[in-house]
Length: 237
Image (cartoon, rainbow, N blue to C red; front, top):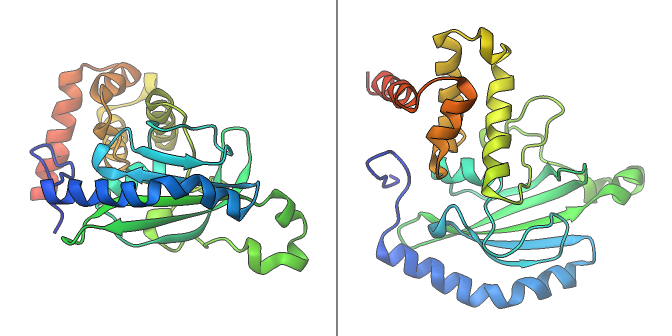
């Protein structure tokens, strides 16, 4: 069972943080070499999940334009929120400028079983997709059967924001667009549904998320807290 804080977010023990630091210490120095060994169109990123939301501890390659100290992806935030522990191999991801990649997320676990570090490998498969008849085995993407990789048709399972602000805005845009109703025409039920979606995506893990959601939904921050309390009460019932 995943330990959580008072607001329902995953927490880490001193031993789990120490284990994460050890993994980062051992793997961090080889991440740039790993990316280089895998070729010029590959990026390797090591995330220390115990330092959420500034998780990037080491990075090699420049496909996504990120740097050490940067945030997780939207998929990374969802796996963190869900306490995910299983590896995610060979799924489709996409950068903001449309670069299609084959990505894998490999989780390192503390002795407690909790995921504390994640190694992500992203490979530009544009050329390979164009030669798919010959290289099909190298370009196969996970079909999305895994619930953590569910995404709307035509949308990638993961995107790569370069800042906490763009991560939050992207998640907000997706949740509001998913409601299918302009904010000005939304009733309470629509806004509660948006807040529920945001909560499932791990949005409220981010600093200032409540104020950001309140501003976009044209409600007060206290209304957002009330919606979250209502959803929590429904879960308990």
